[in-house]
Length: 339
Image (tube, rainbow, N blue to C red; front, side):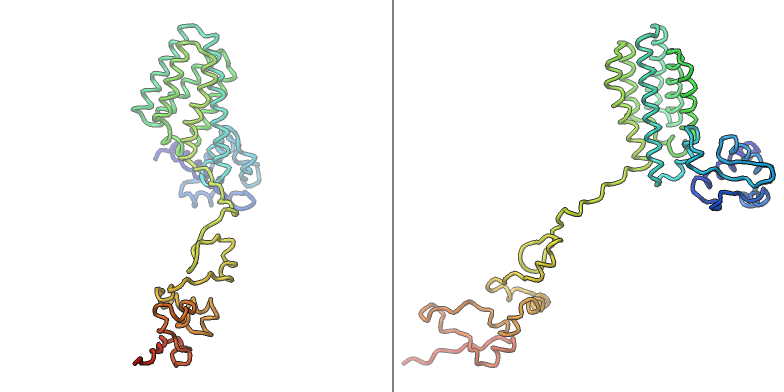
């Protein structure tokens, strides 16, 4: 690897360690010799990588003192946005990226509205040509090419609108994007990009400032939301603790989770003939839930007393029989012989 590439590699590795909090709590680095052993490079490469990081405001170098990393909330700038994107699971990463996209949308809409109102026909034709190029890139090219052409459209619009401050701002936006290029570049392009560029082309041709301000922000936001959700999905709302969660008990209708204890304390009644259809485990559970089952035995959970003249009344349970009180099937009493 060439020296320039090796320095950039070590710079990126140190930046990642700063972002992920892998340094000493004091933020101080070790000696150059120690860092050289850690990253397996020479001391000169370490010295140059630290110098680059100091120029970006990520570390502080003072004569006679150890190099110290700047606190993350102090070192973050627009151009250092990539520092916060190393950890996509960090909620602040998505929050900062949302702010970046919002700023970029505002700049684009403001510049294009200025171009519609004041640009010459020749300038609008040039912007339209860049839009056609961006449409083709969104369909056929990689995300890196799409990003490059999109920022070229922004720079061109800033020059046509005669806004030098916005030219500098676009440069910073592009550098901020490239700082997180490893995570964001693969997500660029696609149908969402083609959709808003196609609409911008028509608006520029018609010089319709009102349509630009009313339609373009929503189209841009839809594209940005797809990139955001692919980079770091939005956190899910916690389920409401008041929402009932129906659970079935052994007998009776389903009850809410919040009232399950009360339902178990007051077991529902057992329908006639239901015991015969239960499994042994369920029968045991029924005996525990119904103390009356222990007193009279499961064999006595039978229909209520019937009139003597009812059909089948002669077949009754004899409570005096041995089987009537130990849970075994009762022995029916047969009617006396009739002459």
